[in-house]
Length: 109
Image 1 (cartoon, rainbow, N blue to C red):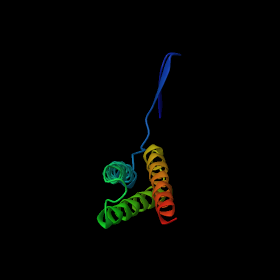
Image 2 (image 1 turned 45 degrees about the vertical axis):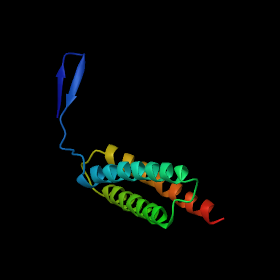
Image 3 (image 1 turned 90 degrees about the vertical axis):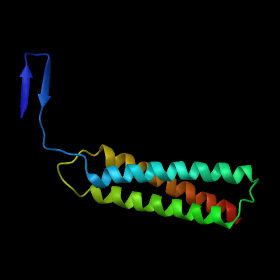
């Protein structure tokens, strides 16, 4: 339904909502990004010898980013939703997954 106020503007009312899984995906992506930055800072302060615990936490960050990506991907099947949060979540988590995999490939070489 559209409401017009002269020729100046239109207001459009919709039943679209932001999906909960998309919002959770963005929150997981932000949490994974913060954790990844903290882990990189801790590892650089230890000059690359931070230990096995930092590596395990890095794998946890990779798992969080994968979970966020999957949640965002599941939102694309729904109808009558705003696509902003699933799009932000999938891009953010996808970049974090790629960055995490690159860190482990570079670290293994």
